[in-house]
Length: 128
Image (cartoon, rainbow, N blue to C red):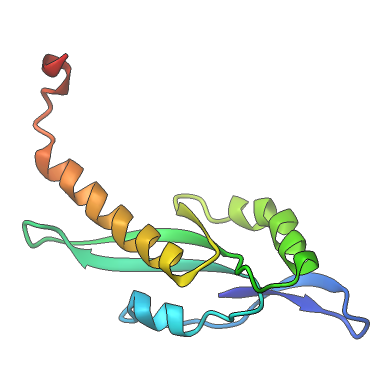
């Protein structure tokens, strides 16, 4: 989890790593660490099992932008997002303003991708 640090005058100046967790932490653990009144950038690796029992994982870039955050803070994070996102190649994007957005984005994407893979027989072009 990354935050934008402030100098002594309260001006936001650079991005700093705030929290690092091991891979065994769940989405609920992540949600428990999100600040309610400040924004964050999060790189989250979600491990799950596919319907056929295989282990899989996905990497997410989450732009946490809660509604309760000050407008100036939200703007700082939205402005800085492209520079941070550029170094997170291969991540799925989630823009979230609520914990439900995060949960649905992470769990929904993993489930959606799995169901597509399970039903893909390679003959989609025949269905037209």
